[in-house]
Amino acid sequence: MELNPIYRSAIGLDVHQKQVTACLIAEKADGSIHSETVTFGTFKRDRRALAKWARDANPEIVVMESTGIYWKSIYSALEREGIIAAVVNARHVKQVPGRKTDVADSRWLAVLARCGLLRGSFIPPEQLGNLRLIARQRQKLVGMLASEKNRLHKVLTDGGIRLAVVVSDIHGQAARCMIQCLLDGGTPQEALRFANSRLKATREELLDALDGDLTATHRFVLKEILEHIRELEARIARFDAQLLSELEPYRWALDLLQTIPGIDAVGAAMLIVEIGVDMDCFATPQRLASWAGVCPGNNESAGKRKSARMRKGNPYVRRLLCEMANAARRTKSMFQSKYSGLVIRRGHKRTIMALAHKILKTVFILLSRKVPYRDSQVDYQELMVKRNAPRWIDALRKYNILPSDA
Image 1 (tube, rainbow, N blue to C red):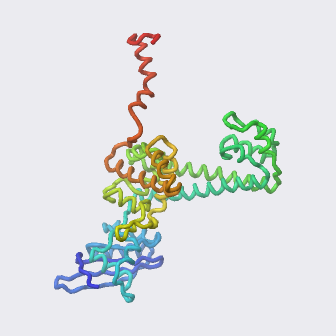
Image 2: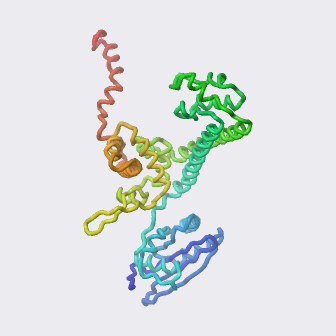
Image 3: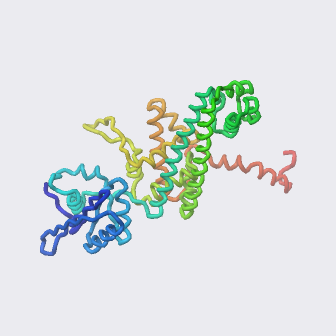
């Protein structure tokens, strides 16, 4: 296959765990092609040598595949030398026809880069890129916390404690205090003193639910699980505080995103860390949705749309958006109406993905225009009047503009 280059020089980097193969393809003044392939290690001194070699070669474009996490340190080393490399998706490289089996990966990347057939993926600024470590570790901790809470429920059930039957959340303050009382050797009657008026269950129902057969083994395992849950909750709180403090320069973006139903401060922070605040990198909401993997699959032939699977995209953004969509569907907003209209014929899971798609496009518009969210189905003037009317009436009565008996 004949490929017509549009760049005079390009470097392709084939990144592995132990080594990096770099291939330079450059066109000389007389029209001849110079090709050079060099192999570097992946230690710090080797990364510096690679960056210096690339800087001296002065290519018009540098590309590398997003191989696991190994590309990140290479990208940072090049960035410190003033070289902004294009990190390309391996799937895009494989889709280009004409690949020969005797062509090395680095050389093939350089050939495709010279011809302009590769497009770099979104790489966040250095500060947000570093904060991804905090945000993604927090998601791991949240998953561990959910797993431990489920395990606590199973062990309690195994010990005959049916508290989850009469209490909506066994990890609420009252339920946790009652469980702790039982683990400390208290009787079900003694544990009832921690029940508050917010619990809908009667005292007889709570007493039956707390009456179980906990053995010494049950108590030991439950105490360890509860201690681990408290530790995880404290650790997540520290991650939240650190993430929000580091994102203080982006306070304006955090405030904008929190105007969208279903998005709180931590959710907005984790979303900003993943997608950034400069929407010019994505150009359109559709490209952002495609990058995140929340847009519908596209499979059309002969004028007929066929069922297509959604691409993987960014799994962290998809998880966040699905959580936000589940929260937004319970609010009095257009998202609730959209959910009610779609869930009947599309089912819960597909409807949640549709809401996630809608939320992400809304985020794009808000960050692009720097305006707060205004719901089309909410009368904000009416809400303002209801909130301020009592204060206005008191002021009118105070200054005798309105009779006191009115």
